[in-house]
Length: 306
Length: 231
Image (cartoon, rainbow over all chains, first blue to last red; front, top):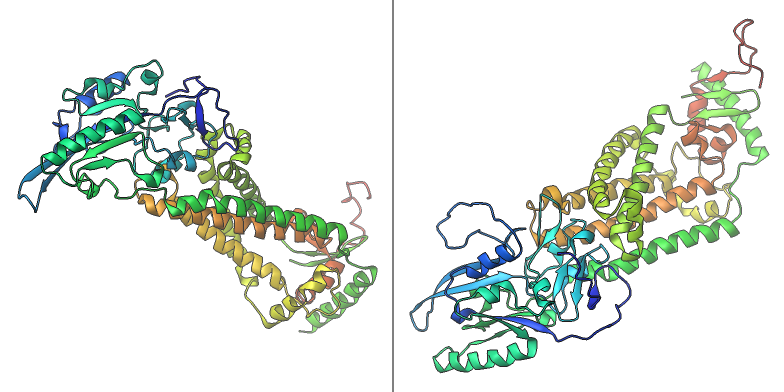
């Protein structure tokens, strides 16, 4: 996506200043109710259509997942899991719509080295700004959900934009608009959390006692949330992480290393400068030039004898 | 390699052209790598990417410059490694490093082609270049993004950053030593140093070179052959 020219930035990648809050906006969120999903992939189609993307014709590997993973063109993907519930003995078909979670504390943005290539709008949407993207793949390492994909065609990173272009003109994301069962709903984060509570009441009344909202605090909460029937075991849903957070290695790399590295190099350069200014010159004296001549004569004579 | 008695001075050959070419290819690649790497390392230095035609160009050029550096340093390594094995004299010399830094070299043991500090620089450069190359491959996303797990790539990044900082520190020592110890730079620009310089800093090496023979370049050239004006 290109930048929306809105200046409603909460964060800008690789930028030292905090952008001024020109305007305040509601935090938005998309709520994906896994218990209502029928796996029709209308959301996938709507995503391709609205964003004018085409996926290559793939191959069938005996599972419903199509394509098999997120790609630079597939920004959202239904992941199908068949799970036998040991308590009820039921076979449960857990279908999770995978894609960018729009973290409040986005690892991609933290890892990005290019100023303004990743921005977070005041409404919480994390967006990639392609004209500033350099294709380094750092966002891939920053992301705790393994979402960004780098195109081998134009060497830019791609992921779900939460239809930031639609949201900016008051429309819901294309996937939410297309969902035939109302499994995907969109609104302010507060409204979505309130609505999710009604879904939990319903699910619990039907025996899903561990039903819950997936809004992981390790990344400051997300602007894409799930209603899960088994919120105590999110990993059941095609490996949804239990407690996602930005990797400690990335935090160290983008934190302490960045400053300590700059300081160490700066200190060494400063030491060289001070030493050059105050230390006695290390220069060859006239006497050493003369003694060198004697030594060369001596050694040359020795060399001739040998 | 030889000692030469020139008209106004005595010089000792230190580096033939093939070593100097490798040294400068390595040096130029290293500076380009440091600038492009710094651009990707810290947001405040991202403007350095404009020297390479923007961020995307910096992203793809940096690893290829690294390949050039690895190739030229590998050759440099084979040219220099035999002079860089540690001796007892090096340990003794390192004990006097403070005196060297104060411009006093009277109490030092006689040293061959390289002193202890130079050998440490050589080996630290070797190790950091190997570490940088391996970690660099792990994070070379365009070609190796699918070959390593994301977790491995995360470690690759931090190792690459730390090794780069370590190497920059070694390079700063190396460059500064070249300027601080007067008369050193000509070894890599003209390929030779003065007799006095060799006597002061690498006397054991000077002995060996002198024993090989002294070329006297002072005699008047044969009549008719002197086509250049007298200097």
